Length: 424
Image (cartoon, rainbow, N blue to C red; front, side, top):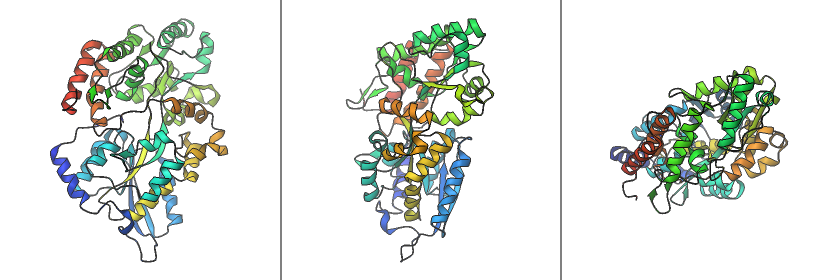
């Protein structure tokens, strides 16, 4: 849930037209022979990053071995463009994908607009019984399941073990300890403590959770980003930069952060399991044992990292819904989840997968699984993704000093109220 836009009335109208292509019972639609044999084409839009996409493309193509008459058309859609591109395709119904890999924060939005086919009852029951509870929750909207969880994640503190050892410091457990550790790293090695990604709202969440707050109170329909915790969160992020503990950049934060960490320009960064494979590709981590992972440093109130991940969903207007649902079943099978963990260190969503040798032996999974269990579950509301665009703007302004913490919090709340019109 890093990017999003607010839905318009036109989009909602088009969504209803798309839904009319077929009802939500996927058992009697799609290109399926009377004998039950699946055939035809399934187009999958995958939002995985450059390090992951070759693995997912190969996994997708392997579906053909199980169903020889089904052809999977794999399309990699850059994550930053995906939410808008998917919405546009679904709203027009033209060249829309059959299956999408959606950020967990997009599911409620797409489902509320009528874009997603309901998960078949048998599969929904399996997800509720055999998948991680917090992962299953992300695929639901208004009491119905519209997506099957593929991977789950959260944020952690990546650190260069050698650099911290040379500086004589341990991984910081709080933001105050981060400042102290960074000063020692600068003094002993000449390097900066960490890279702070300030151009993505997802990276703001540990700050506000760390101050005991949240963006919204969904239960009471109240905007809370501009409360005392929100102001403290913007201030804490800015102080990491002004203190010299962190460097940041207002543009292309992902590549700047990855490059700085992999090259040894900085000793630490906050990132998720999706970044492990890319980190290993850096000069500093040719010896994989040099990469350490710790909990995100706590704020003044708590340690809190957000629940993230990706779900798989079928387009309600798909002309091959049976094969599409079968493809989602395949991608979320235990065999494929274990295969994905082995190749990319991504966390499975099936509970039993954690008992498999290739998962149990993965050091990164063994760190991130307990972190996921403690992660803060977000409000699964349709507007979730839309809130992240104005928040991203204000977060960037706050960490770069273009706005005060107070002004950033106030501006965020003003933008939220325009999206959540009937909220307090």
